[in-house]
Image (cartoon, rainbow, N blue to C red; front, side):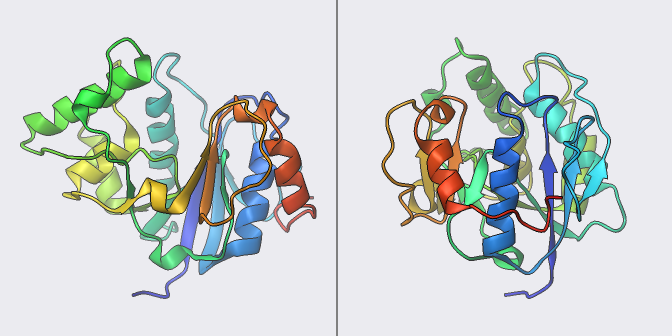
Length: 242
């Protein structure tokens, strides 16, 4: 176990349908529940003007049909900074902590879906299949994937080496977490279902189901009761908001 402080890197897309509500909730959850964190890096060409006490890296989205390539560009921009902690956490705006967690010892998480569970009709599925195929060409055979939509710890030197030696910009691209973890030699981690509450439908919600450590959601859930529940749970502004 380590008690070193850890930086968080949060790539942010260009434009938010909900006026960066998701980012506010993510930052409030970090401010309330994270221990052993140091700096938060927001990587975006269009960061909201209410941010404070964060470090901003101006990196645009260059890849129109390759979302993961945009994410990798932004993570690389942060990971090549000498001042970034040697181990950092990749966090997305539509993820929130629901309980106290130790950023310095956050485990890798995995999802038990394998190659055959992904269908070529969907672009993200094609990207995942492409990732599995790339790993197999490198004699790496996984029985899981790591794109769990959860905060993911990464080693910056390892991340840079892997991504700088991979043509991740070529479509359909690669899924960033599975590519990184697979090439790092990881074969598994904490199963997603044990620590994550997933909200990805417009069905009416009654609770945040706080028996889980983290929440991961999508735009569909934003049309349910989820925004109200998040606002009630994280009422007060945090130090990262003006």
